[in-house]
Length: 299
Image 1 (cartoon, rainbow, N blue to C red):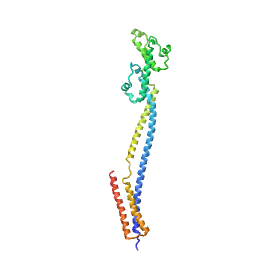
Image 2 (cartoon, rainbow, N blue to C red):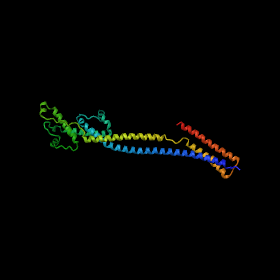
Image 3 (cartoon, rainbow, N blue to C red):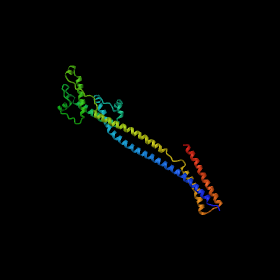
Image 4 (tube, rainbow, N blue to C red):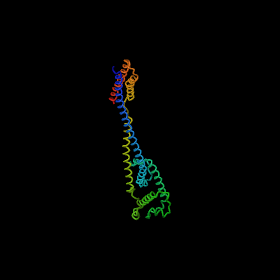
C-alpha cells in the first residue's frame, strides 16, 4: 500500500521552505533598514547636540566681542564726534561708516545714546566755564580743574579733557597772528588708535567667532541633509501584503496539510483541497513577487 502522507508532507515541507526563505529575507531587510534609520537618527541627534554646543560657544564669545567692538568703534570716532557742532543721528553714523554693519546695532544704539549724553554734558560744562579758560596760559586740563576747584565726578574725564583742548585750540586760532606766535597752541590729541593688546583681543575673538560660524554652517547643512534622508526613508513597498501572502501560504500550505495528517483524514477530496490551497497560496506569492519587482523598478 502506498504512503498516504507523502502528498501532504511534501506540500507542508515545500511551503515551510518558501515561508522560511522569504520570511527570513524580509525580516533581514526590515531589520537592516531599521538599523540604518536608527543610525541616521543617531547621527542627526549627535550633530544637533554638537550644533547646540557650538551655538552656545558662539553666543558666549559674541556677548564678549560685541560690546568691545562697539566700544572700539566709538572710541575711534570720539574726537570726530566731539569736534562736531551738532551730533549726527545714529542712522547717519551707520550710513557713513559701513563697518558698523558688522556691529550689534542694539548695543551700538545704547552705547551711542550714552556717549551722546556724555558729550553733551561735557560741552555744556566747558561752555559754562568758558570764561575761566585762559588761552595765554599753558595750563593742562588737570591743572585747570584743580585751579578752579571743579567737581567733575559726574562727567567722563576723557571727553571733558578732549573738549577742553578743542575749545582752547579754537580760542588760540582766533588770536591775532602775532599772539599766536607767542602763545603755544593747545592741540587736541591724535585720534584714538586701539592699543595692540586690545586690538589683538578683538581679532582673536573675531577669528574664533568666524571659525565657529563656519563649523555651525557645516553642521546645519549636515543636519538638514540627514533630516531630508530620514524624511525620504521608507521600508519596502507593500510590506503588509508580503506578510498577508506568507500567512496565506503558511495556512494553506502548512497548517491544513498537517491537520489532515494529524486527523488521518485521507481522501481524494481532501487531497484536492490541500493541492488547490497550496497552488492558491503559491500563486498569490508569485503575484506579490511580480508586483514587488515592478514597484522596486519604478524607484
